[in-house]
Length: 128
Image (cartoon, rainbow, N blue to C red; front, side, top):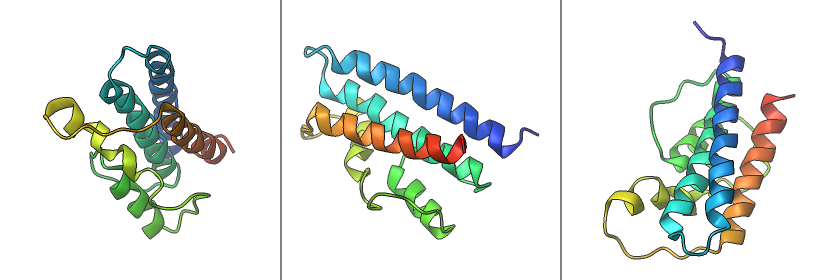
């Protein structure tokens, strides 16, 4: 069985891959925000999962960042940001990619801030 710290590092590496994709798409204005937002959401999701793994917290397969944040809070994991900080990214996980829903507008700068916030925090926890 793979130790939690190793799984946490793997998830952080996958988050880095998603961040690279997010940044590449964000630099092309013709790319639909739903595609760019998908990689922002995925990066944040993997950062949350990396922290959960690091702390040995078992989580179900989910794309819901609110559920992951709630789980971390239940286990008393301190977060340097409001617990609802990443909620705005949830629709980008699945809904906006597979369903016709009202357009969600979000500035790329805000997405980038959320990605950076999640990654810096997770990296600080996992690499510590």
